[in-house]
Amino acid sequence: MSRVYLYIILMAVVTYLIRALPLTLIRKEIKSRFIKSFLYYVPYATLAAMTFPAILSATDYVLSSVIGFAVALVLAFNKKSLLTVAAFSCAAAFIVELFLH
Figure 1 (cartoon, one colour):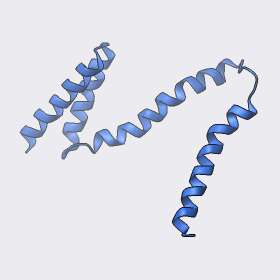
Figure 2: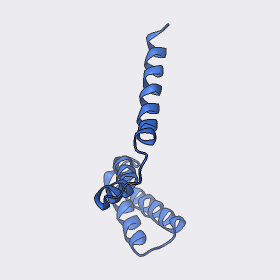
Figure 3: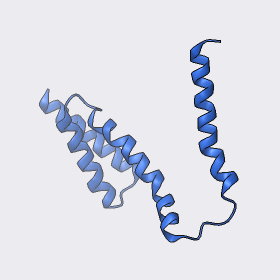
């Protein structure tokens, strides 16, 4: 058996264990407010940590990425829809790219 297949099987087992062990080991309801709030925010923090570096490297110039990100933040904090935020941030980055090119 090739080492690549061994690595794939090992990754599958580790991924399964990470997901299955909490379900089997924790049977009671979590009562700690700290742990509940921590678990509530983990998906958002993980998504932000994965997305932010991709935002900065999405265009040819970091400046256009930063301006697009700033536009997205302002619109998101003003509770605009996801489509509006995405469209305006992309448009802002595109316009800055036009001027920088």
